[in-house]
Length: 134
View 1 (spheres, one colour):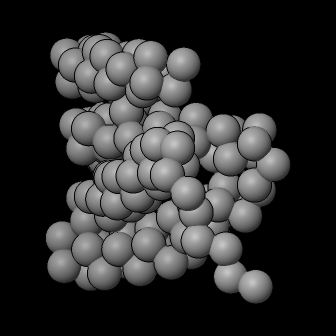
View 2 (cartoon, helix red, strand yellow):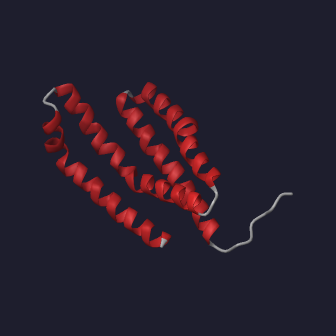
């Protein structure tokens, strides 16, 4: 089930990404005509959707962890993504690349934690015995 969910996330994420790239001007025009806001929104819609599939994987793996009675990995993924990875990356990249940098920080945070979530879930579901520290 998890494998099927991951596959769906990749397909959905890639589809939404392409849709955002193609329809960005139309979507933005519904909300604003301001040239600065339009430019910023376009950059967001061209950068962040690249990581949507991995963001979906984070959400699924967090739900899986909660479902199997292990809420700590879900908490670590959520807080780690936001506080440990996203804030420093968005801030650091924004100093270097401006507003685009904060968008790139968002995408990288999703990619890093999404990759980690994917690896954790594969290890958890592999049936390999876990280390028990007494």
